Length: 462
Ligand code: 4AD
Ligand code: MG
Image (cartoon, rainbow, N blue to C red; front, side, top):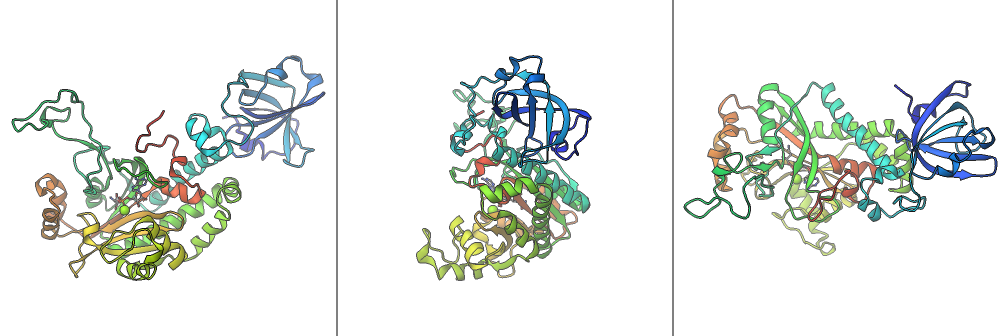
């Protein structure tokens, strides 16, 4: 394997000729020397390449090298006289691989707005900020697997096309090959999905949980990590229509153990990114969210706060005049309330538990009070909910009754109910929104900037 620029930058000065491949970020030209900054995405920094023009055989070459072009430079890595870097490459052997016309290249040397960069999402990974986001996302993604693999969890691939609605919120995208202009109809005049591709209605999944539970009832501890889809008309800085979710599910597990895993998991991810992406994290701390590194370090060393929903509402009610949507027992918590709890009341991440059953999904275990469920949300400053989870209802009768109350057809979930018929055990799990995680650690203001190609209402470009 050829060495990447991140490795070349760690080399000591020597005569050995090495090569660097990448894209030119900047060029500074003077009479005798030309300086290029070459970046290959392996790290934030580029390699400074110093070209002694007198030794260059092709004198026209320098003029054709512009910002954005791709090059291969060969030469020794030597100590740098400039103050910005320890080493640089001295090169007189340069190949211009792909030209980049200055007048039409959308990425100029100047700073572009984040909104403009969203319009050129196919090129934005070439900027410092989006390169750093991509590396942090990559590191977090690997760390997710590492965390669970080190603890004996099996990675399970749950289906992307699903026949059930896990969250019961009706926010699913229909998957169909029917002719929309002329769909087949039943005698009652409804669309006849038995004629559709799958012979029934099918949707893009909103969560892999239900299928994940079936594997937890065999392998004990599992996790999924895949794309999920929500046809929810939310145009906010923390919602996407397509996002990635990490969902562990554990058999022989209650809500308390579930919360412990969630806290340990988040802290592991924060610690990993601080260690492995220190250069990028320093960049985010400086240019995006002041002091983000220090904030994460503090979180890693501090226990999360805990509140029941009832306690949370009591706190919030004292400040109802400050909210757009005043709160009372029974109301769903909005983002403004979640942020208030974690930023003002607790001043650290907080796990809120025992929500009213009316505002949570059908599968959550009902508490003895008959009113609340063993659900939990992990809330973090600036963002609110980052994790949602629960202990699951393991009792067949209670669960069936819940489904009927919510007008869900128990017949349609026969396989899910089988888990409660055959060797049922207490079990629990949660879902971490992967983009919310990336958004949180980088401090990026809008979730659309932490996924390469965001999908949101009226937005499916590229
Ligand atoms: O709270 P949610 O809806 O929970 C579930 O889907 C459960 N089935 C998870 C489980 O227990 N296995 O979603 C889980 C997390 C949220 O906390 C949030 O971080 C993220 O997924 N999320 C979204 N992220 C981006 N855009 C959206 N529209 C999101 N909706 C949920
Ligand atoms: Mg939720």
